[in-house]
Image 1 (spheres, rainbow, N blue to C red):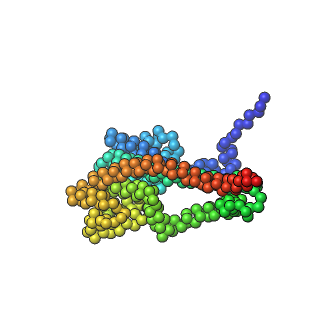
Image 2: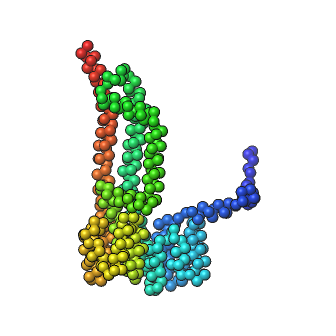
Image 3: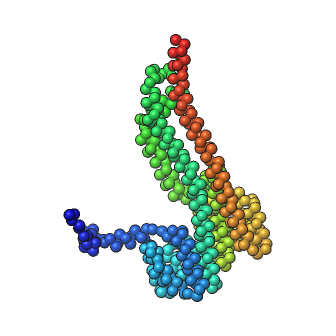
Amino acid sequence: MSDFIILDTKNEAKVIKETWGFSMDTIDAWMISKQRIKTEQKVIFFRLLATMVNAGLSIMKSITILEKQEKNLLLQKAYANIIIGIKSGKNLSQTLRDYGENFSDSECSIIESGEKTGKLNLSLLQLAEQVEKVSGMTKKLKGALMYPAAIVVVMIGSIMVLMTMVVPKIVEIFGDKSKLPPLTQFLIATSDFFVNYWWAVIIGGVGFVVAVSFWKQTESGKYRFDQIMLRLPIMGSVMQKVILSKFSRVLSNLLSSGISIVESLRIVSDVVDNEVYRQRILLLREDIKKGIRIGESLEDDRLFPDMLVQMIKVGEETAKLDTIILKIADFYDEEVDTTINSINKLLEPIIIVSMAIVVGFIAVGIMQPIMNMADVVSEG
């Protein structure tokens, strides 16, 4: 009969604390503090809180109910801290600002505006839709970028396998390599490079990625990188539409919440997640301070299409800027969906043809000397 050992977790935790100076609870708390609230969880939080507030429950009572029914440890901790903040005299927006890594400046500003106007439930519903839409656009953009990137990685991996494992085996049948066709010699030289310097290829690739990552951390590097990404064929257009959708939706929500245009532009500049657009929006903000209208400032700017500028002008003239800008956001959402679907359909044949060309190049390089040998034998 097997012996069963019952573990005393309390004693184990005590031993760990005495040995290393910290307990398992400390480790758990540290791990929870490093996690971030997911977009889906934020959307549910905003919607549930809006429903409770609309039903007449106080913020304190609503958060307490959410804490009791929550199973996720990260959200339990967040709700507990929000309750502590509200009990100390802070309102909801002030408390959420303490979680800057989870709740953005634009979200807290819209909630703050809802508190001041007495329309907190509407602000929360508006936020839920905004977070959902903006997150959806970001995911679609990442998906559109990941697909071709993954295919390129697979292609490079396949070529390396052919060059290091297949080609060396085949070229062994050839005698004097100096008499081989130029294409075959080039193929053999490339294969020898991959076989002898595969480590340099890997180090070079990793080094390039690390160097670009560090370069992006600098102010000028981030601007130049984002500028290059916007100029990419096809994908640059998709990125621009995603940025304009974010710009329009968040700006519309901030303006409809009663936040000033100057403050709204400051907040939006951090939302677009592109240094080129961030700096341009900050310049727009300075123009607004000088009395220049948005449409006038953005006119003939390649970062903002003429259609968007003209609609903004109409919004300024009719005093319905927030409503018209929201329609612009919806338009770009549909444009992104259509473009990404078209790109996915277009990429598949391009990738297949590219792979066929590479494999065909290798096949011709291998088969050409074999066919020459066959000709010599037949002539003999």
